[in-house]
Figure 1 (cartoon, rainbow, N blue to C red):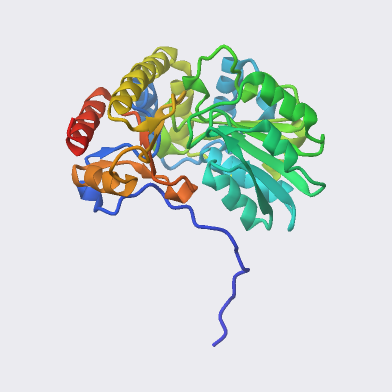
Figure 2 (figure 1 turned 90 degrees about the vertical axis):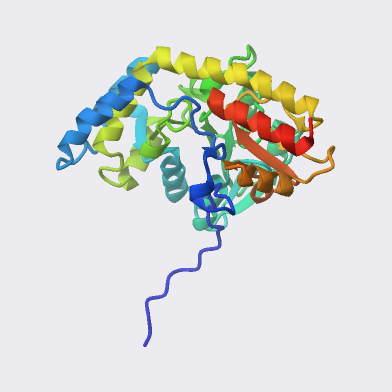
Length: 360
């Protein structure tokens, strides 16, 4: 019997940060860069209220949430598109703009989903080298050819936690051909307060060849609800809306996200918590001779080349203690782990287990 045959898909499957151990043994999850404090109580309240009306479809355009976002950031609501997480925005962009044999440039160490959706649409992935785990604008520009269609980057970057100063990002857009789409992922912008940094939204809100994405999964603590959004020219947004599935963000998620983005007090609490523990954890790991960069996000990248134990063994020992972190082999970063900053109790437990592992 002849069965339906799918087209050939030359793309890796996304592998979430699951451990080798059974889920029931994971007591502390520090693998997915989720919020340390969780969602705003106001967001939970709005979610519960909206959940009482499950029989109704959500507003397919998310009009209410787009208005809230537009008012918050002083932008045009008609240039906002909502997605089931920012992942869906990346998928829509790739579906709309990439043809077979187009080239897509990504930093060597970057969010894997960029290359997955690009490859599904037949693109060739071009990797730009990084310098000290920081995205190199010079390297990106050196990789541009007549076939280049999109440049993807996150700023700050995942999984390295580093960022590109605003002058370099402006220079990148200026030097790229106007028909190359620059996609700037602002997923972690809330955590970064450096003077030489500006978010993609603030830098490129008037540009017609830049798409900026944001998410409610990180600082706002709504990872389980899957809400993200993109901002670009009306031409780009209109194109994406043509292929966006209807009702792609559920009703409770829309109201929870609106409440979350309005609750500036809770967001500040989250950001201050991360800033405090970022410094503490950096100091503790440095005392243990574990190499780590001074991350500007809610996670740290640890390298174990200078110590007498491998990242694989540390990963296993943490897992045995019920702590799940992210192994970096899938990103091509050898002998390294990425660790999300948790709440105070989780962070203290993490430090305690590391002390036992390294006998300090």
